[in-house]
Length: 276
Image (spheres, helix red, strand yellow):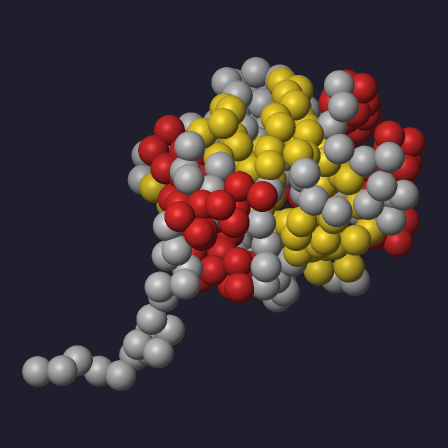
């Protein structure tokens, strides 16, 4: 069964109302073009900026953003993967992706598991853990097309997480992400293709469009990779809406022709010391 995947690479500003209005516009464009599952970028309603996460944070039980997304999923009768937003629960803040079914109900919530704490001298420094808490759960949801996993940005760099999602039966992994102009050119495509090849799944990475006036400039280049590791589509830097057809049955076809998952030696994948 072919799925029409909608990618919304939107430009994020420091005005939440503008971001939500733009998200509504792009989601509606994707739905009008026939998208059945639509994906937004990481932190689509908030600049990716540590000192703004608390200011933009919303509680899931009383959220302007989630109310909008639920209504759009219901209106367009589509699955909607709501990128991520700063979520507040009690004293804690999380980088969270909420996913909605065709009736606008929340069917999954992924809190970013691996927090982005890096310092590359002279290029970039960021410390999510200074303001955010890490998630503690793996995330997937089921559709008539198959099972989808959800991770957020830096989670992409941890192959153990993806293998667990594959063991849980996912056929595609959705990745709202905001790589930057240092890590993006170096690692974005190679990591997306690597996770697809290693796990024989579709990989869908969705970034914000590039905003050169922001303190953190996203790389852009939203991407769809098939289970063979081929890039089906890749955006540039600018705001983009794209419909990408994917056929999840290709996952099993690739796994049958190159049965690497069946060839795993799990009996040996343990630390037992070295034989001399």
